[in-house]
Each structure stands twice: as structure tokens, then as C-alpha cells.
Length: 384
Image 1 (cartoon, one colour):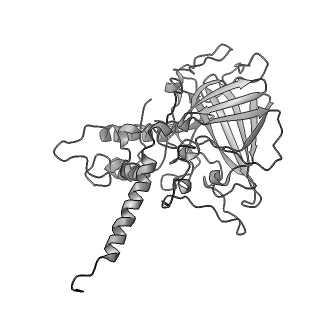
Image 2 (cartoon, rainbow, N blue to C red):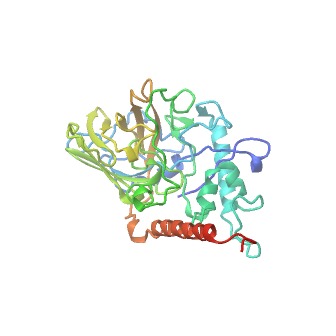
Image 3 (cartoon, one colour):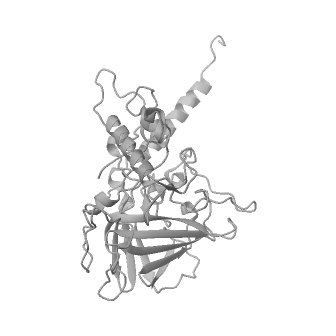
């Protein structure tokens, strides 16, 4: 898949700061889903927008009459969850703005992907003259990804190469709120659980991603969101009484019970308790009973997420999500993007088999504690 970075439009692309993102659109749609839909798939012409339903097109159906969403899909995108107000205050960008950003983004990534200078060495991603300098200026989070010990440089990432397009519009954020940001939390809202990044007492206090239990960045969700780096692929399988979504990252699998009812035993499960039903050409999924460790922006106990999957064209599934929690926000809010065909299939993601990072993290913490204890017990110079 093509990879790219976005630079803000301006007189000096090399120094312009952008945190915008993108997703693969019409060009990638030509590959088509690896699992063909039962109905005939109409190939989009160059002048036809794949995010808009073609005139006279009928969404494919399964053999039992449900809208067919099956196949391999991706939501990789460089469009951020929240709007970058340094780039724009608008919810959408013009086609010219979008294409200009995508081109600059691709050029920046290509430069960063060039072979390392053998004399200078890789250096730090935050060095002004490093190949990644422009990327860090554009996407500050790349410094964390490549700056930590064992972090990734741009060779290993596949963030997506286009700005997310939905219904013919290039979006500046996944969130569809007026300002592209989450609404303010109620003053009485419970305190948001913290992320255990700096907790090293045991593997049990580390994050779910470190422990190879769930992927980072809410790929599995709900809501399901691209993580901005890699493994943003999905495999959807449907039966008359279930819809199954296999997530590439950490190979999580969501099982949606069609026409089911929520459990009432108080047990909370990973990815919550999902039930679904069909409304015309849309699969509607409602999820409750989320675990605290999978809270969404601090909400979990009374959180309800409603997702809508709609096949809007031969090569697009529109995905809308709404989150609501009366204890946390005044009213429901959410976001939207399109899934597009994955050029390939989802392979096994073997995390536990090679998870050397977790014991290394804990061993490093023990080493640091021993060194600090040794310094504390050592006599000060001149104290003899």
C-alpha cells in the first residue's frame, strides 16, 4: 500500500506543520475486495467518485437477504480523529487542497525513506538535519514512535496515503462535531482512568497493547478507529445470526449477535457486548458493558456506542459511530469515515510469540531501581 505524509499548504512546505491525515481512495479501489461480493461489482470509472452511490446501483445482498458487507477492508487514513485547527477550521477541504497536501505528504515520506547516510548514521528523529525532521514537524507523534528505544522509523509504518473522503467530501477530521473535537466533559463526570505508561511494578499494570491482549489505538473498538501507523485491516464475515469482524492488529475478533439482546449478568468483556440488526442496507450495532481498561475518553461504565455500516458503493462501506454516556457528556456525539477495499487478505498477527518487549520493559525497570538504590547507599565524596 502506498504510504504518505501530509504537509500543510503554504509557501514553505518543508517547514509547515501538519497533523492531518489521509486514507486510500479511488486509486486503491481498483484493487477491489479480496472476497468478492455475491452480486456483480461495478468497477468505478476514473470520473466516478467511489464514495458516492452510482446512479441505479443496487447494494449486494447475502443469500438470506441481508446487505453484504463481507470481505477484506481497510480504514488506514492520515486524517486525524480530531481536527488540526492550525491547518483549517473547516470540516472539509477542497479537492485542490486535499491533492496538494497528499502530494507534499508523499514527497516528505519518500525523503525520509531514503537509505541512511553511513557516515552520519541514523541519529535521532528529532535532529534538525535528520531525514525524519520534516516528518516530526508534521506529525510530532512520529518522534515517540521512532525516538524511544526499540521504536519504529518510517520504513515500518503504513499510515495511509490519502485524506479521508466521505460522500464526495474531503474531511479534516473523523469526528463530525462542529469543531471536530470531543465535547466538553461534565464537571461531575467520573475521573478518566490514566494510561499506565510509567507503571512498571508488574505486567498486570501494563497496557493491553503491551500485553498483546488488545491492539493500541482502538482498532478493534468500538468505535473502530485507525491507529495512524499500521495494521489497519479488517475481515468481515456474515451469517444469518452473526456478523464477525476480524481485526488485523492483535487478531482480535468481534462477534455481533444479530437480533440478540444485551446480557444482564453484569459481566463485562473485551470489546463490550455487541448486538445488531439490519435497517434496510445498514447494519446497526449497539455495544454496552465495556471494560474500564477499554474506556473511550474516560467513559466506560454507562457508555453506549452505536455503529452503522452501510455499503454506499461497490468499493466503499460508510461507517458512522455515536457515543453516549449521560454521566460524561450532555448529549451524544460521534464521527464518520469510509472503509475501502484491502489489496490483500488479513494474515495472522502473532504478538505473544515474539513479545520480548514486555519482559524487557520490566527488566529495565528493575535495573534502574538497582542502580538508583546503589547510588543512594554509596557514601558521598569526602564523607569518609
